Length: 502
Image 1 (tube, helix red, strand yellow):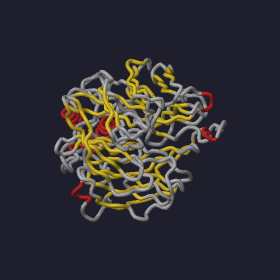
Image 2: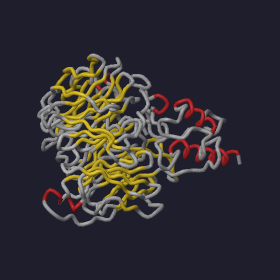
Image 3: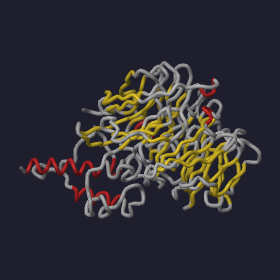
Image 4: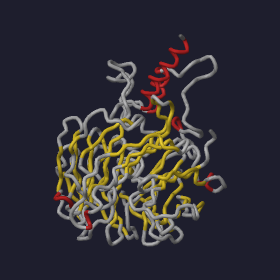
């Protein structure tokens, strides 16, 4: 009986620790990838990692740890570490493809955990629209800034240097109890302002109606339906919800504060260009329309108060109400079109929005007043931002043939860009991902190469050589605890990192 009680406690504690609420990312300190850009700010930044650092990448050991052949090229991956389900302990990468394939991969063992296939609506219209919707699978999150780093190279409470494992205590002590996990969560998140409800709130330990809640994955299918399914096996607990017109060209799917958002472009299938929002409780859809289309791969970003920021191809940066999508304020880029999605970052206790114009300049805009200025740069795609160990804020972006990085400096009380470093020459560079001070970027040539650079100097630390043999059409870099993931057009899904002992 004591063993059975311990097992039951472990199961319930694991559900609380990893699930929390069906539609909340509990404890935003965990280094997980929720949607395109990693977080609601589209920062492309994982703040800390137990293995990846400039120091560790300066030594041998980082490599391709496994690859899996899939039927079609996967889109961006969402990740979940330390999941406890009916199959045991898992760390997962989850991705969809334009063909409707949906795959869950055990990232510790490099094997397929489950597969599903979603309905596919035949694409119609011009060649521009033939690709239909971008394939995206995302995990629910919130608009708060993710937690601060736990120190260089350290994973803090959530860091791990081995495969997913249980929370069993010392010999004779049994399983970690719910009370202990609740105490840890309260210490890491005392106000519950970063994604989860505090212990004592309804549905949480110490409060009424505490019960196991599932962890969900949201996927937008090409027929315009939003599917919500269990991460453990891909099964849907309820019918999908109508969201967008079938065959609309959509991208940037994200679920924030129980609302699903996506952007549409090119007027495909008669769908107006703009940003769409689906309230997952009421099932109501609202839409903000822009004739010129939404710029950038991620489409839009969120401020910590939930405000939606979208940049247009006609040179407007708009702030939208998160519930109604009504325009709150507008910044205009002097007649220049935008070429990137917005990125939101914190600097000197204030929130700022950065976006690149088609002339290469980067605009820095006060998120509260939507006033700002443009700075000479050479950006040609979506941006990444991070803060180094010394407190310096950085912004990086692909340019024509390299990755360029700039420092954010103070200039009369406002941030300004200063030249930082430029990487070695790279063919068709993609938007970088930053993990614990290391900037990872892909040269998307006929045979792509993944590079790692020191985020403070641009010094090359590592590259993948001839590991990959097909270009990338739908996938982008994503990261998780100790790993990076990337899918290529021949259907190969790669994981790079330090090998884990099993």
